[in-house]
Length: 61
Image (tube, rainbow, N blue to C red; front, side, top):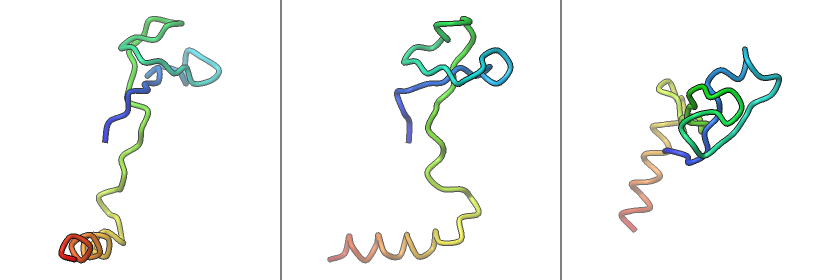
C-alpha cells in the first residue's frame, strides 16, 4: 500500500514536528521524503492466518 502523502525523512532531527508534502523533497529543509503510510500488517501478524481464511471464504461466496 502506497500513500501519496510523504513526510520529511529528517523531521526528528531538523524539525520540531513532522513536515508533510506531496513532493519528493521537503519544502522547508530540502531533504528527502519518505512514505508516511505504515505497512498494513507486520510479518509476525498473529491473526494473518484467520484474515486470509476469511478473505478466501468471502471470495468463494
